[in-house]
Amino acid sequence: MQSEYDADALQKKFTWKLAKLPAERKALRSKWVYKVKTNSDGSVERFKARLMIKGFSQVKGVDYNETYATVVRCATVRYLMVLAARMNLKVQQIAATTAFLQGDLESEEIFMEQPEGFVDQQAPTKVCKLKKALYGLEQASRVWNLKLDAELKRIGLKHDTCVYFKIEGTSILIV
Image (cartoon, rainbow, N blue to C red; front, side, top):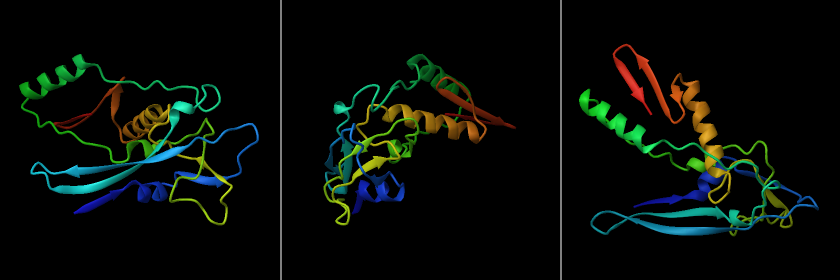
């Protein structure tokens, strides 16, 4: 049985650094959300723990500015499925593990109380200044989308809003 614990990912990705809370700012709270993933037969596959920031208490213009992230149109997905069927192409789906933890918070300063189980005993009054997005942040989808967009372009994919493609010889990659 595998245990998937978001805490490991939080530390490996350097999601935050401890800092003193500026006088004019308020630290957001967070909570752990636990889930048991089961197999089709009902047996336990793994346990999950995800740290969720309480983004509903964010203030627009202070904690975030933009939240919009592009989304592929249903008609585009249908077209790609038709294209794949007609050309007898292999279609695969992938999931980005800890996707929101990949997005960098560059233009906003977000402060969070130290989460339960992660309170630094040498600095218990400090807060976490986020370097990466967390699940629950208003801008989490946007910063993940910006990161994904930059990476797909970096490896040579061209794009049309939400569809990226690369043609090499007789191979076509469409994401």
